[in-house]
Length: 186
Image 1: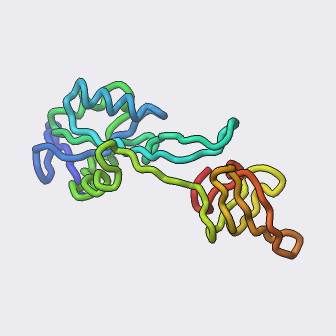
Image 2: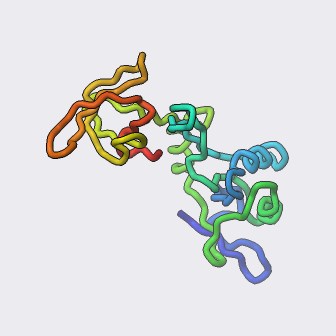
């Protein structure tokens, strides 16, 4: 990761005066608005990676699309000519910097994220447990317990778990909406 440092008259002294990738901090839940504005009105190349995950909602399990890096996105621009314009764009809280150091993101990191997310900048994370997975019960009587999935019945939206309860393993059948694969956030 390289850095740009302003000199006494505000010009940058860094690896290159041309365009580079920077990390931008956005206002909470404004990543999409900021990315759209930067693409449409500032004509910048922007990367706003998104994840599509299944979440437990009041009406059951549902798909939710959210930012892979909440409150952050990446944009490619000329630091010395565009910093103020970008800093004051709608949805942008600021360009990430450390004192007077403005870190740039290496192109291979951006390319890696693009390859991971694909054309639509969305990666899908399926939290549906599979037989043999360790799962966590997130609602109901057994909330908080970890169990091993023995069977998934997607047609009925049910799952059979092997729960260690009162010193012995017990098979329990419950709704898929009550279970999430361990290691996947709620």
